[in-house]
Each structure stands twice: as C-alpha cells, then as structure tokens.
Length: 360
Ligand SMILES: Cc1ncc(COP(=O)(O)O)c(C=O)c1O
Image (cartoon, rainbow, N blue to C red; front, side, top):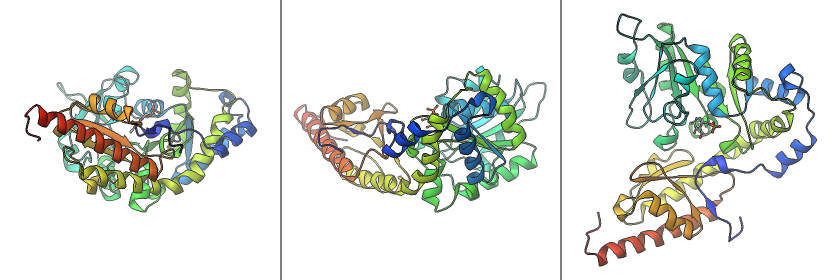
C-alpha cells in the first residue's frame, strides 16, 4: 500500500479485484446465463455446492438478493421470521422480508449477537386467532454488527436440530461464513451441514468485485432461479464476474487469517489509547467495534478527524465506530490507523482538559 493511500477500514466491501481476478475476467468463457449456458457461472455454482456439501447453488448479484430469495423460499405471506436484533436481514435490507415475502421480522436480542436455542424457543408461534405462524429462523455468521462474532458450530447445530423437530427451516446469512470457518479451524461444509440454505458473499473478504451465492437443496435452488428473475437479477454473459468469483472461492479463504491477525493487532493497539473502549479478546475475525464516547466526540467527528490523518472508518451507533480489515489493508496500514487514532484521541482529550471536563 502506498504511503499516501487511505487506510480504508470502512468495510471489507471496498476490496478491489486482484490482478489474477482481472486476468480471469478478461479471459472468461461466457454464455447466456438466463438459459443456463454460461460455463463459468455453471462451474462456480457447481464448486460452491461441492464446497458446502449441498445439492446446488445459484449466483446472485448481491448478498441482499440472496437473503431476500431465501426468505421467500422458506415462508408464506403473513408469517414471521425470527432473527437477531442487530442482524443484516432485519436492519439493512430495506424491510425486504416484508416487501418481497410478506413476512414480519421477529427480532430477538442476544448480547453478544449469538442467538441460542433458548433465546429463540419462546418466540416460536403456531398460527392462532392472534398470532402469525413462525415461518423461518434466519441466523448470521459471522455477525457483522456484533463485531464479527462467530456462532460456534454446536450452537448452530442445536438451533437447526430443534427447528427441524418443529418443522421449521433455518437460513444462514453467511456473508462472512469463511471468516467464521477460519476462526473455528473448521470447513464451511462442516459448519453449514445442518442449515437448510446458506448465502455467502464472494465480494467482501474474498475480494471479488461482485456477487454472492445461495446454496441449498436442488429443488429450492431451482425455485430460487425464478425468484432471482423476478427481482431482476438474472444476468446474461455474467461469466466475467463468475470468473473472479471462482478465484475468490478457491483461493481467498486461505488468507483470511491474515485479516483476523490484523484486526487483533488493531484492537490491541486501540485498547491502549486513553478514552477508547474495546476488548481485544472479543475480536474474533476481521471486524471490530470501538466505543469512542470517552473522547467527548461523536463517531462522525472521530471519523472526520481520522480521515484528515489518512484513515477511513465509519460510525455504527451514537457512540461506536467500526473498523474492518481486509485484503487491501496490511499490517503497516493497521499500525498507521493506530497512530492516527492515538493523535485524534490525544487532541480530543487535550481539548476536553482545556475546557475543564474530566475524561470518562
Ligand atoms: C452480514 C451481511 N449480510 C448481508 C449483506 C448484504 O450483502 P450485499 O451488500 O452484497 O447486498 C451484508 C453486507 O454488508 C452483510 O454484512
């Protein structure tokens, strides 16, 4: 990374395709994917299904579309979808489950973002004169807004076992499931063995420019193809994108541990800075959430000051900012971010001192 470039920690969605991806895109064999004739897309779908140990997979333009289709596949109008209160499906997809599937979200708060069966069970409802039936449980692993926390396999399996006993399906928003598998030293196949469908992103940490996959049983994926068309997501010679996706899928999971090590380094450095609050032991993957309220600045003010020092990060609540490590930020970049934050914090605490305010 050049000395002058921004250290961009806003999200792992900002990654740019690697030179190998760009070459593969230029050389991709293509066909009309609406007719299932794009050989590169077909290969990507076959490999995704194989790697996840499921029957079939579908290439979709975005994670949001993958989740939208999954909710529709598993539910009927007027049902509820149980999800965690800070989950992406509930908060950041424009109420898609209401808009496309006619369902209501039933958000359940878990302090660490990790729902357990005991949290979910009391919210499962049969159809009655007052209640909407529970149609689906939608989980997220890793959990973005809980700071990239990982749902352990036993927790996920327990939820699936109980859900299936009750005739309920489980969809996993696995936008960053390879980060979870890396943390657990497991495979995505093992981790997702019991979920009915999983969506994962080729973009984000895996570095592809565009695309996500929805993986699951063949009959559901065939139905998903029709919903994708309805949503305007059926594309033509899209092998140019799938070619980058194949590299993302085959090669990029191997390097995610570097992003995790960088996030931990960043968290440990930030934890030393007066006025900031973060517990590095809770930084399990590539996302960290940092409480900046002790500086007497809002997250937007902190982000502005960081930007002036060459670092990009974004506010996620009234008191917190989020930083995400990825392919395009190295160890040196993380050290630069710590130094920038040290200066921002020192200036803020100095200003507070001059104003006679006791630091928190
Ligand atoms: C956990 C999670 N799920 C789903 C998505 C949606 O992905 P996309 O931006 O490709 O629609 C994101 C995006 O950041 C995410 O973090």
